[in-house]
Amino acid sequence: MTKKSKHGSIEQVTIEETMPHQMNAPSFKGTDIKMKDPFVNKYGVTIGDSLYASDNSPLENWSVDTAPEIMAGDDWVHPTNDIGWNTTENRELLESKRKPQASPFMHPTKDAGKGTD
Image (cartoon, rainbow, N blue to C red; front, top):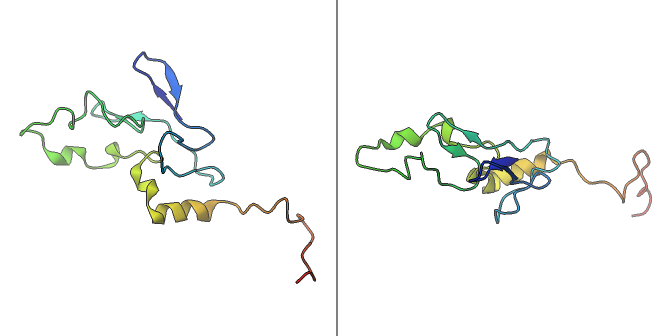
């Protein structure tokens, strides 16, 4: 996943389907869920860049005239860079999608543990 820097260049924000700059961010590696790039919503706010501030964001320009519901909906949620992935339920979902790591202790076609217990 990449993001644009203040200077307009593209910067990498993920390493091997993880976001190491976020303390408790989950790993998507081995889950078949692909990390998505940040996007700019219809309000001109970049979502998913891990900066959490944008010049165009209603949060940065809040006033008594700002309707809170403007920040509701899918335009404000990134599919893979969202705090919701840190919940127990979503971490379990990711774990259930990972293929078990059988090697180096299992033979691909033979039951190497047969009769050992």
